[in-house]
Length: 130
Image (cartoon, rainbow, N blue to C red; front, side, top):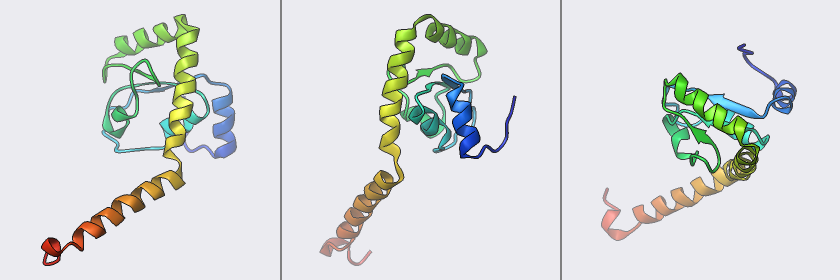
């Protein structure tokens, strides 16, 4: 069932009654908040490796990956997760820890360092004319 937009309370309630987020994306979205929010709420993420998300999941460590557009592979990963509560727990905890790397303040600080480095490089004598 598609819920459409959820406010914070609806999202929290949905996460509270869930333990897995399945993301069968086929679109190469560069980055989105859905996976991070689910991981922060201790949901295990099972997803296809597309877009910017593919670099955020290490299969079997902080989530599970399945072949894009392959329902049988998705089902296999869900059965693996269902049959191994310890794996679910490890993935959920590691995913939660990883999610907090993407806090807004951390992202802003990282971008500031990168931009300051680019500005400093631009100010070197050999690049001043560019």
